[in-house]
Image (cartoon, rainbow, N blue to C red; front, side, top):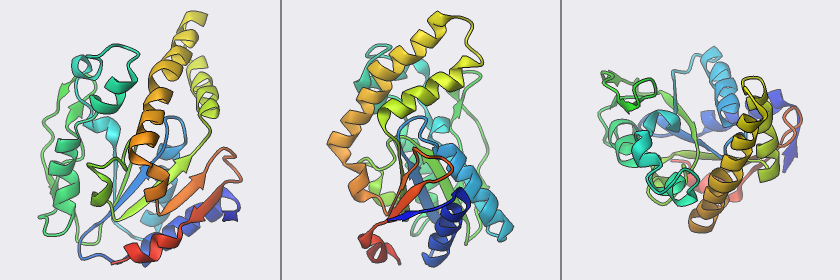
Amino acid sequence: MHQGTRGELISQLAEVIASVTTAHPLRVAIDGPPAAGKTTLADELAAVLRAQERDVIRATVDDFLFPRARRYRRGRYSAESCYFDAHDRGALCRVLLDPLGPGGDRRIRETVYDRDTDARSAVSPTTASEDAVLLFDGVFLLRPELVDRWDLRVFVSVPFEETIDRARGRSAAVARSAEDLAEVERSWRMRYIPSQRLYFAEARPIDHADIVVYNDQLERPTWDVRAHMSRRRM
C-alpha cells in the first residue's frame, strides 16, 4: 500500500502503463462509483502520457448509453435499471474494445450515443495507432461481460456517503431550488448507490482490479498495486 501526493499517484500509474506490453493498443479501465473521481484521474493521467508522447484515446462509458426510455424503463429510481439497462456494452465491445484487442483492426468509434438528441450517434470511425493507450472511465467496467477485455484495470474507491457529499457539492452551483438538491440525493440513495451494491455483489470489482486507488483524500490518495498484477503483463 502506498500513500503520496496526487502527482506521485499519476506518475506511478504512468509507470505501470509503460511496463505493460501488448501486441495491440493497451486498454485501461478506470472504474469506480459515481463521483469517485474517475474522470479527473483519467484526464490527469492522459496529460502525463501525452507529455511522454504516448498516443492516448480518452473515452467514457457515458458515451455508450442507451436512450433514456430504455435506461429508465424499470423506473426512475430503479437500481436494476441503472445496472442492467443503462449502458450498451455490446456496442462498446464491438466498436471500441474488440477492435483495439488481439486480432482487432484498430478501426474504432469512441461514442455511440448523442446526449443532445438522446439517440444513437453517427460518428465516423477512426484508426488507432498500434501503440495507443485507451483510457476509459466509467461505472460497471469490471462486470462479467467486460472484465476480460481490459489489459489494465484500475478501480477508484470512495465511501458511498462521500460520493453523495460530492454529488451535492457538484449540484449546488447549478441547482435552482432545494427540491433540486433533494432530487440529487434521492437519486443517489435510491438508484446509484444501490446499483453499486448490486455490482459489488455480482461482479466483485475490487477483486479483479490490478490497482485500487483510495480516493477519499483527493490530494493525498492511497493506492495498492495488487499482487496479481505481474500475471496480467503480456
